[in-house]
Amino acid sequence: QVHLVESGGGLVQAGGSLRLSCAASGLTFTNTVMGWFRQAPGKEREFVATITVSGGTTSCADSVKGRFTISRDNAKNTVYLQMNSLKLEDTAIYYCTASKATFLPINLHDYNYWGQGTQVTVSS
View (cartoon, one colour):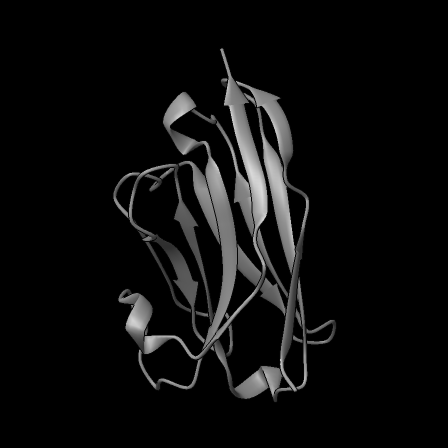
């Protein structure tokens, strides 16, 4: 059974930083594309970032480009999301997700497994 467990969320002031982690188990991590999505209250779940199996290529949403960085450690079966220069509008539940795709998907329907999410709240 696949488990994705996020950690690292919390309350931070605008302009601050957080690093989210996601520990994966029950899948062949080195063959799995990983990603992050987020969902703010009253809004649809949206793509944040994704990373290839090797970690050599990433893709981020325009809204976070230059501020957020996705990375992975295949030895630890863990994917990270480094979030800098946080804004009020980054407040959301952040979800770790895994895909069997052979490309970098940005559509949530292309992802097969989801974590429970971790809350990120940015205050003024």
